[in-house]
Length: 535
Image 1: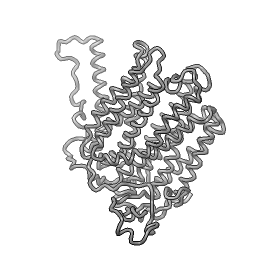
Image 2: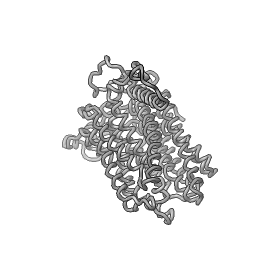
Image 3: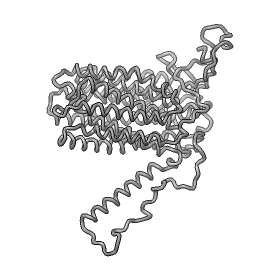
């Protein structure tokens, strides 16, 4: 493999230092941040006022009261610990803390929806129907999203002055969909009509991905001055996984069990309603400076070079309509984006395919649950470990890390295809989840180091849209292929090999797809309005 492009140093952006020693951020969107307040906020020092055992000296302490006091004390300490972690590095003053809570809510909504629809969407939605028919239903829901995903980024670019409202709306629309599902729930069968289930499932997916795209565009504007975007994104992901996926998913599972057992109601969907309403409220508490748009330059995936207008007469520039300048993505970013898309396709495949494999085995519910639990546990451990490692890695050569991560995922998928073994598939899932987190952190590093500040928000939004589209591609493969492990992993391995080839070729400065590869500078210069118009 070739070394990192030799002209990287010469094209480095002003202010971009080594990743091992990040320099203070020049986040121009932040107001002056005073240093008088502590990083912990108003709740930073709960232990400074220890709670007394009783209100008066003569109060009798019973076992029940002592247990209640101890539980309350532990709750306060836990809240204090979470609050200190969320407000560390000046996150409370930059607005990062305010963004953290909606991110946790979004993770919690996704987990609650997974609990609510796990049995219905994959197993019971079409009782007595063939896997092919269920696959057709899911394909119908996934296919429209493949069309919608590329449009999300540009659409959200146009609502820059309403980013907080757009975040809140992504929650409120999911509230409405959850209410529709609750109203059409059949308690006797524990299912929903197909004409309600699949459109609502699609809507939930679209609004969840829209939140992720918009969150990526907002994050650079709330970045504290003392840390970089890589660690900011890793922090948001870890908070989302722990507070949203683990805690929120656990609560949704408990409520689902109680409500379905006692009342024949979809308890997890009631959790979705509560959390989405809370997420909408929390989104509006994000600071107003995330909506500042002055001086922004949109990013573009294509690159037209500096060889002059392609076609037309030389004086076309004089008569061309005036358009805003564009910031093309450089070679390192494009390489990282291709590698992440390759890995993301594998992630989408693993999200859907194991459920069909488990269903096809005609085993008991416990055996099916064990198969899904093995894959799910591997994915969770890998995701958490990857994000934990990404926050501590030295990402000085992010494109190299992405290429290596894509190679590791492809090799793991090939091993699962050759063996057709559940344990090997679980190991491949763990490797994929860990590599996905590390590769995403590397992409974030490239976006931060190689782009000017005025284009980072747009670039984050565009890259997230492309990654979601790759996820959809992998999910569609998981829906369409035959339910034998070696067959499914053989199909996805073929796709991964193509993606890996494009990643390596882009890293070497060439492309298999004209205009979307690494045949561009390491750091591309901004394209002027006339040049963009003529190309």
